[in-house]
Image 1 (spheres, rainbow, N blue to C red):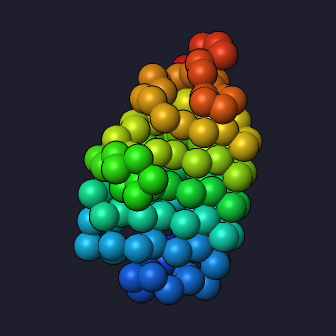
Image 2: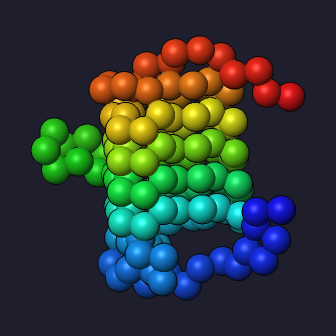
Amino acid sequence: MRFENWKYPEIEDGKPTKYNWIVKNLDKFKMGQHTDIGAFTYINAKFGVEIGDNVQIGSHCAIYSVSTIDGKEGPVVLRENCRIGTHSTVMPGVTVGANSVVGAHSLVTKDIPDGVLAYGVPAKVIKSLNIG
């Protein structure tokens, strides 16, 4: 089992974890069990970021609950068992559904439903995944 000895990581606001990822605005950040966040990922939880159980986030990702470029803000929710590919960006107010996969280098600007493969700039649903 991949996470047999998984322990909740020590997280300090704005400082790299021992796995080299960063959360800003830690008081609005929630993370489930058996979650894997890749090195050099940045999470800005100013308006809330909630990560479910068994989520995988690749390295070099960016998850923003606020965007200073266009003024958008809103909570980001990554539902259980979803996977976010390396170098992807998730924008404010977006939910990625349970058991969905976001391909590498994607820009997620809209909700992704449960159980699908989505990728691109902007990310679009490509196909349904037969999970179950």
